[in-house]
Length: 277
Image (cartoon, rainbow, N blue to C red; front, side, top):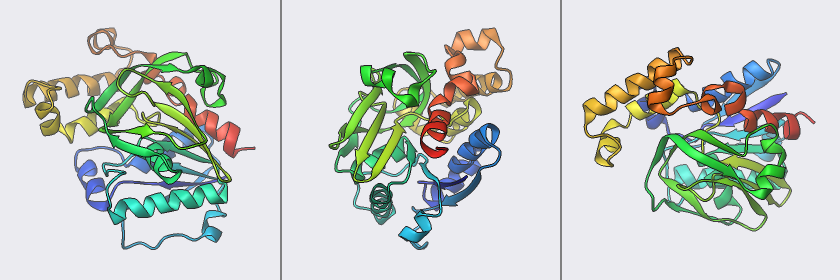
């Protein structure tokens, strides 16, 4: 099985995340799927790097499935780092390849199929996204087989999907974002995606927050930098010792995000239901 992971971050942003001790966005998927199915081979595509050539249809046909990571770019800006990713997503729909996208990936798929993405009026959702609830369609959908109807998630986004294209079905939402998961049927393609990050782990979430402390203080998530660093230290301590009852209670974090099998069920279901057959 061959999977292509499309890392949506530009080169300079990947470097900043690495400096903060965060794992590469593509590496998160490699770790996750490598544990679930060791026989998979991966190739990473850096489409935000405009000095790299765009793959053609013959290259696309060499893969069994495609995965979009997150990104700190803005899907509705007229920026070549963005527009070439939208163009590639259109190509995947035309080719009919099984595709999954987290956060940025879901937004890019919506744009490619004719929908709209805008800045969230509720601001940033970061850390733990609370009480994501499946819709009636979500409860019947194979992406959520074995998942509870209500669950917390790892999240990091400022934008959200505001108008869905024809052929889209909302699968989950919460108070912050009405669309937290969706399916898109467009041309020959079938896309499954989430606004949240089923591929994140707690340590990575903490490192992403550490890379954005100034913004989080400005936006009122923390009183000051010291408070931010203290909270991030607690997240990292729980990541190292997920059984600690005291930190689970203080942080309000449970197995829906700490248990790898529960947290990543959407991804393993996509692999088993869309790619493997």
